[in-house]
Amino acid sequence: MSKVFITRPMTAEVEARAREIFDVEIRAKTSVMEPSEMCDVLREFDCIVPTLGDLFSAEVLAAAGDIRCKLLANFGVGYNHIDVAAAKAAGIAVTNTPGAVTDATADIAMMLILMSARRASEGERLVRAGAWQGWHPTQLLGQHVGGKRVGILGMGRIGQAIAHRCHYGFGMKISYVARSEKSLPHPATFMNSVVDLAREVDFLVLAVPGGAETRHLINAEILAAMPQHAHLINIARGEVVEEAALIAALQSGQIAGAGLDVYEFEPKIPEALTGLNNVTLLPHLGTAAEEVRSGMGYMALDNVFAHLTGMTLPNLVV
Image (cartoon, helix red, strand yellow):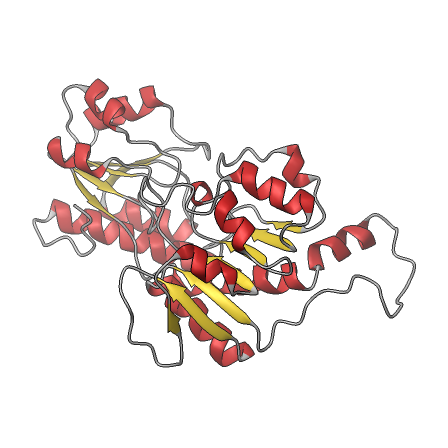
């Protein structure tokens, strides 16, 4: 009988469905898998449902030796933790869960824009510390969001959902960089370079995939190009931003602030970053709504079911 392994605990609904349909083992730990664990499950199971941080690298796939697994059904839209070329060479298909995450991630981007602009996390810390002495006209003055220019780096599903919220919800002007110009239902300016985009925005929002092509796409040069009043918002992948350069820009006041849901060396966050008042820090909450995570889980299970029954994989990456 085919065996399925899920690398992290899931919502109760997803776990119940998995147990109903498959001969499944669900790992109890919430931590990322160690290389030795990944080698073991590659040899023992037909399908694996990994997620962020489970680094199925070329080295792990090579070390596993006699691989039984034929599908890595990733839980999540981003799959830069899987070496897809090495997986394909080993006869392993890779799928992901696009679509299910779009609105939830776009909502987090808007929350970070507002929190960073209006200094919300700084204000909450003030209240929690018992240091708030009451309202006065110049306390914690932030920036108004309505009508400002947002630059979106990446205009896929999530980028378009962010643009929709910015335009229709806040009357913001949209500029973007993407692989190609998009046909959008609202005005938006397509730009040819990240540095040109950075020069003219009030908010620079990152919505690109992770991986070698986008690593450190936001670096000291891009941060220096941003206006001093501008804010950087990252809901993409941590390694898209050169974290040391961002810390320097925030410490010096080169940019006004940042809102981050992801980090370069996640879950490790430098004290130099956590000690800053002009940055809002979230613990990777992009898809953290129960119905969203269940939807992602169902999609991953659909990919597993399709594989085991010989159907076309609905969300094939490679």
